[in-house]
Image 1 (cartoon, rainbow, N blue to C red):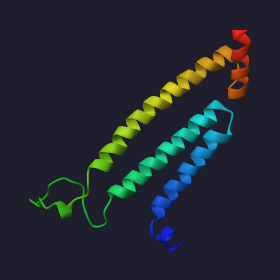
Image 2 (cartoon, helix red, strand yellow):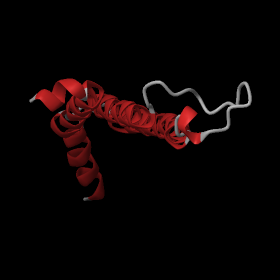
Image 3 (tube, helix red, strand yellow):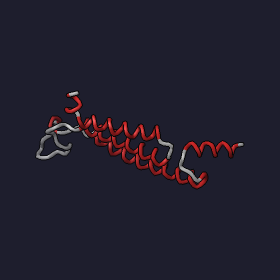
Length: 123
């Protein structure tokens, strides 16, 4: 229990991820599923940012000639977060475009109704 308060950023990231996962799992509305997906993305970015940060260290930009590795944070998690944000925005745009097309075709955002209507079209 004490570790939860020491690592509170990681705890918050897990809680946000859980909220997003349950939103994706339990909602039938496609827009709510996309929102849950974005919650999960944000939780992962928070977790990576927490793991990449070290108290007392600075961004990896050489200032005043200090080149010791112990003076700077690891830049890889920051790069992963930036790359993930770009991919997440692209995937979200694709999902929203797909949702719009499904709405125009079936006039609903309920995934269960879309499945039933699509099976009726096949018959």
